[in-house]
Length: 276
Image (cartoon, rainbow, N blue to C red; front, side, top):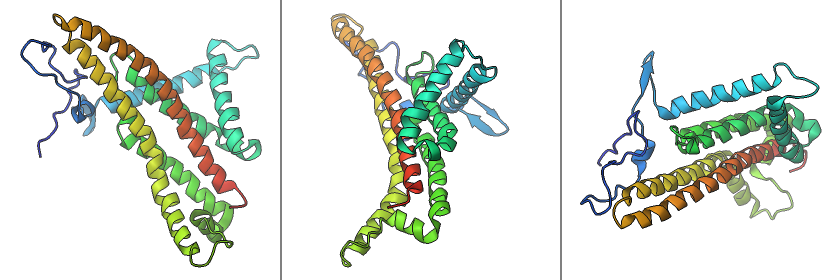
């Protein structure tokens, strides 16, 4: 099997810049090579590539923002504090309280807020100049976040309900079901909850960011490729589509961050619920 070429540290789209329509070269469509990066530098034997660097910079930016917004809170908030409070309150009231409830959900607000802003910023890198890559389109990032949620949700279920109660929770045990059907339903629910759920939690975010980035790269390359002769008219259309896709991607990035934390709260609420 032929190995996909990696993207160098100073290259994003991996296409020939002197290749245009009618110039005798074919269109170099984006592929998996648009998601593979050469190491930019190494520290202590650990290689840093572009996605890792973006993740670190994004994390530091989030920490700096909330520290700047809340390190010295004022009765009359400044701009940063006002934005920070609005974002924090939106997740606390609109997601956590609505899903888990105020009493039970308050302790999980910091976790959910951190997850939301981390996912959102990692998504936003896709449309930021020079970065132009959504970190969450690398499957290991959404998978790691989904496993973090998993490690909160599963132990919480056992802590709240004990072993027997947790088993009933994970298997959807329902004594009203016919005896012949009940074991089949329990097996399906068990695999669905403990194996499939964390996978789909990660894939939903990854697939949307992967597809969105692929479309942005496709229209961007096509705009440049057709910028030649009569192809300029086609290039203009592709450029308009690029702008449309950027606007649409901004919407999707926010929605995916919201959906990720909404599902997180749903899982936690299921672990805390008394009746299943």
